[in-house]
Image (cartoon, one colour):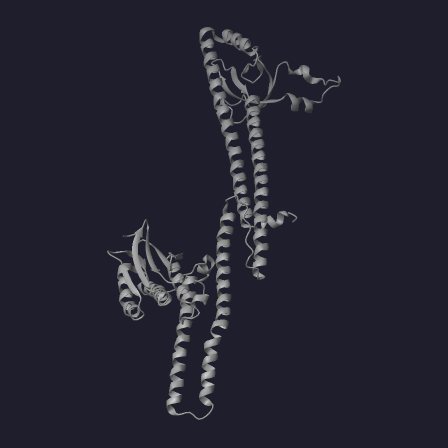
Length: 483
């Protein structure tokens, strides 16, 4: 895909980057001007201190020998390399001595420090009036090339002569220019680097967004197997893509469950509805007595109740698996639930000739819903009693409760025929699945499905294990954190 800068500018990341870059550039420009002016002020202060020291030295020379000594010292210092500006003038401003040939008008008319830098021309610079080609320079060229700027202090001596001591500003100005150029180059390099980072980061962000958009279009077209791309960089795009992929996997799972429920309802509920219709049709055909009609109606009501229970189980499983159940959660003692279920099914087991025993001593507290747990355990115990009765000479079902690490295990074991095949054990918890050995028993194939959904609601597990002989159903609950 071709990369276009205007497309990057439409992204929030690029706009934030542009704002930060603009703020950085503004701060950098202000820093350049601040550092430049600060450097100039520091050099100006140093220059003034140097001039004050020179004035004190000349004052001591004047005190020692008067004007002759002062003139001699001024001439001596003026001829030194890199000397300051020295000038002695008569009361009218006519230059008498020093290393200044001409000075900007009006400078010598005010005593004390000059308010603004002034221009001047040194002695010895007249020799530079010729160009390398030997042609004469114009006066404007001479003024432009040989005039310098300086600051100075002007003093009036007791004999009304004027003494000026100054310092050329060429060095401070050059230093300021160097600092300014260095800061501008650094600003340019940082700005260029910021633009490069912005360009590549924005391009990478745009590729991520394009990948997400393309995957989203496939998903909206109905392909729930599509997933958002994850580059492995571990950035916020990858974290977002991973979370969305988990959500898509959950949606796909729920959608598959919905399709499965629809297929199962269409397949497994067709038989009881057909029986209802045939029973009603048979009741209407021929002559029937009142007792016959009553028998048909009672059978219809019983069949309808079974259908209602089936639909209620389907709705409960769907709500629990989707996580939308409004069932309340509180402290539950599993041992109490086991004793209640044991008391409920003990007469049933005794009637079918099945030995039923429970081992649940002590308290086993969890956070859960008592009614849902009791219903799940009832389904498991009912299946164990039903499929072990008559299968062996001494059918037996045991319910045991024990703690294993951070989990509480509720094990329901029987010595019936069991489910030898591992694949069948995995399929047994699916909705409406009835294995061959269970075809002879009444039921809808929703008991273990509901138990599996209840365990998932409680963040637990439901495992079907070979009992050797029989089947063991293990319900693993996480222990209570406040226990």
